[in-house]
Amino acid sequence: MRAPLLHGRCPGLTGALPFLPLGEAPTPVRPLPGLGTRAALWVKDESGYGDGGWGGNKVRKLEWLLPEARRRGAGTILTVGGLGTHWGLAVARYARETGLAVALGLIDHPVDEHVRAQLERLRASGATLHFLHTRTRLILAAPWLFARHTRGRSLPYYLPAGGSSPLGTLGAVEIALELGAQVEGGTVPEPAWVVTPVGSGGTAAGLALGLRLAGLRTRVLGVVVNDTLRLDSTTLLGLARRSAALLRKRGADLGGAAPGPGSIRTETAWLGAGYAHPTRAGDEALARASAQAGLTLERTYTAKALAAVLALDAAGRLEGGPVVFLHTHGPR
Image (cartoon, rainbow, N blue to C red):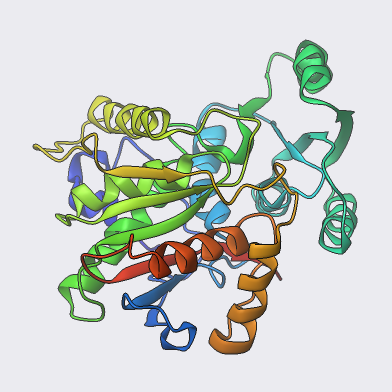
């Protein structure tokens, strides 16, 4: 069974922090010359990651979260998301393979063809779906959801939206450690920036911590695509530090590796009208990525993030070295 790079970096974690490999690593990194950027643009492509019914960065989080659910003796995972949740579908597909039931609390957002297709996938996944419509109703229903999905004395194992807990964040720590190894091996030059969409914060926070563990000076640019959560740089840095505290508690010696105040920069100008609301800039970036770079993006996360890259590059705000775009979308 493949061991994670994090266990190699911090051997004290090997017996204390279980890991369940769910995909083939490392994911590839390659240049993206076709988009005409001034900065050298690369992509680290997570879209093919995952051996099951869904892919992308969500699977990385589950490699740490599913073994923890089993360690706690849970029979059901309870989590939340929007109607077209990529996260919820990944949980449903991979948890089922480990013998865990899944319950999803869903809230409304704009519906397009992609969301309708996601809903059909969710209905076919075997998960129990609860359509709560609004965040307020979801919060009010929480006690009922826990009671409804308790088995005997075993409470469901709750995962926040996007799996962005201190433990789930380790999925992106692993991505950053892979990138560090690819820099060391000469596959890609050390980037000035790694750019990622920010829907729940775990990927940006994990990258910030992992890049420091990898010995890189690279900063994280998080393009915020969700207006229902607090996702400023201070909040994301706090999540990264809670992940570091978790690692230390489980026996890791991190030395002086810790993300500082300048490790994460967030941008909100590409959010548009709100979460899952498409934007003109995002749609243009999606079309360019498909036609010129062979990337399949979607309108909620990755298209908005690439739109930000293209605009910031054109404005000269991504100077200082190469830029790596983290491609997180993983359809099957």
